[in-house]
Length: 116
Image (cartoon, rainbow, N blue to C red):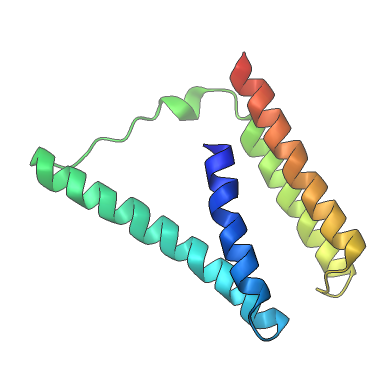
């Protein structure tokens, strides 16, 4: 799933590079992801509920599992915000490297934790 999500995001990044200006590229990437989550999840749950004939029950078992990946994701977001804030919200090679390293570290931890 992680590889599929990364592959789907690559096309959005390449398409955003063609946008005029950095703001348009960021808005494009955020807009695409918000649309994917909102429509993708919402529409599939709507169809599932209509086919089942009753509201779908969501499992809460994942909440009782160790929350290490969520903690790491939260910390990575905090570090990303601090790095971007210190650079006055400008992304250069250093900031891009830090963001990429945070993503790689998160994926590695999730994959290793999932292998257990």
